[in-house]
Amino acid sequence: MLADDHSMVRAGLKALVGADPRCSVVGESGTLATLRTVITETSVDLIVLDIALGRENGLDAIPELLALQPQPRIVVLTMHDDPAFAREALRLGVHGYLLKEAAAEELIRAIEVVMAGGTYLHPQLGAQLARHQAPTAQRLTEREREVLRLLVRGHTNAQIAQELFISLRTVEAHRAGLRARLGANNRAELVEAARKLGLLM
Figure 1 (cartoon, rainbow, N blue to C red):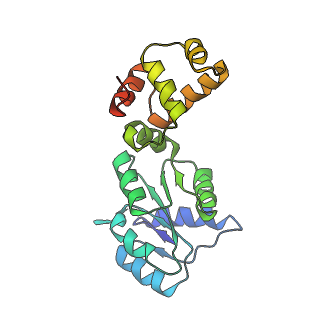
Figure 2: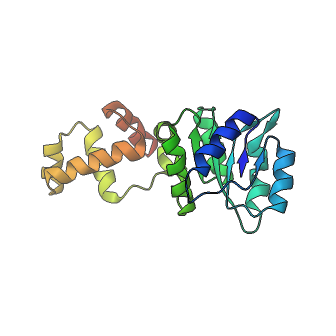
Figure 3: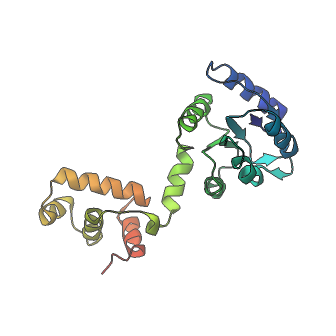
């Protein structure tokens, strides 16, 4: 099901998705009212939903869409690149969020991931969300916490390896993992993350 208030966009999406033999477009809508009508009359596995549907907000319909039985998967396809929109959409339970500027192949990839039971997030937005996510929400292992404590104290990778009796390669792996999970690009951001975690003693 395609839900977008621009008929030309829907036509393009229909041609793109319909070209994949695994997909079939069973309905389309330019308003929330039409969307609500079509989904009650048609069996829908996946809804590609824009946030802006005229003056309406597509996110407003997500709770009721997810309440349908069987529950459809929902991929938001939008021009809104503000991480706040992505965060809210994911909080509401959508299964995918990507930008209209993405390549056509990315939409097909998102559909593949979502229909396989996964969650797809536009890489650019994923990086931004990770960077702004509160470190307290992260589940760090005790070893990761030890490595982080030593890193923010100024220890080198070699010194950390010696103090914790682990290999240099293991330290490097922990450091890369910490940077990714905490959204920290440098030592200063790691220090700030450690402070929020209460690891600065």
